[in-house]
Length: 531
Image (tube, rainbow, N blue to C red; front, side):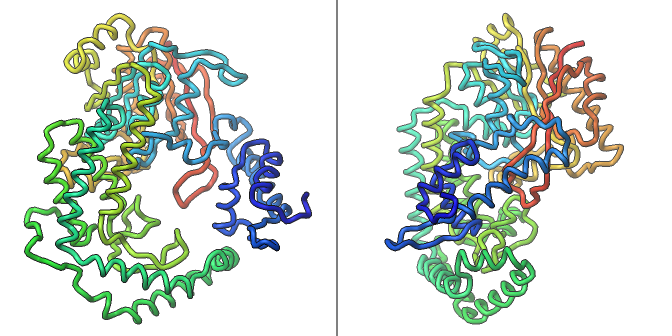
């Protein structure tokens, strides 16, 4: 077979046998689309691929494991890289209800919380009916996976918006009623937007871009040329962008507002919103916020906020490849290094809002079928000093009774890394949209504090304070699992200061990262217990 051109389905079967894991026809189609392999046409015009090309590509994948071990050490546990999972599986159901930078994948949580053992994980640490705590909850991955396994959970986070994401993911809803309310809100904002703004402009702009891209950026031929010569991409893209702007100068200068009498007053709008959103999107966002304010049910309001926040993130006036970083304002057409063609910032939120509203209902429904009857409690507080029992007693007296009897069985958490992410800032648009108070100064290990010796000492002190505080609520024989990229070797000292001992370390390669920097990278799961 290796000398043949074969259909995509047969190619997927060959690749699955070659790699020893399931590779689908859609995986092969992806390789063609992104110019990893060539596309050939058979006598019947069916798409064919070359087995030798596939073999070359997948052998490079096999070599990757060895290169990573040479770079990061032979103690990498490749089993918990979870490289066999597609992106749709690592972001299943509510795990992708809202983007969140720096979260771990659900399979990693499941590996340590479930009741299976293997040659690496030789002990069961949690059982159904136990209580697990995540003092750096983030978007709630630990809580969601615990619910699937029948484990009660408590999450703590300093960020109010993180708590809102986790509440939206874990809430109980009448999904028919929620769908009705989301559809009603969408119809109202669509009416407002279509009456106020010129839809013909957006359609015409897309048509002009599509025609121009077809002539000057044909794929996959263009992608293949770029892979051979990156300097060519820089020079060619600048030239063609200039040509498009010159040819469409008068059109791009046109007004996009149809009826200015419908515009909402922007006098109280923040500088962030006026900088990172065009006029139509600003108006649509604030119209939807007014709809949220009229909704009586708090759970529904929170879901609407998460839908709108996800929409707002996708519609900022920036390039597609810098959505997570907001490096430079982009209000007109530009060359996109992600899509290898000319793109433009989103002109209206309507399509994203519709898609995310429907996607939210679908994801909540999928999770509802999987989650078990457990308690999920979310605490917006500082894990360094919060009294967990007092808060749970106020929020959920029945769960508090269970908590008193059982205590917390253990911890699974991924604290922030030193100087890597400003967690409030990554959702700055949401804090601005919903006028949420920020506690940036209380973040442990934030990027703003840097990575110098003083920052490391503050980090060790902060993480140690958290572990000492929460240990009071964990059973004496409880297990603490802390996921960290400890490149500064801080966790042995953190454990010692916290009255804990590191009993085992699981080192895993982190694959399929979304950042443009995909250099070999590993993180360690520290298993700690009381001294």
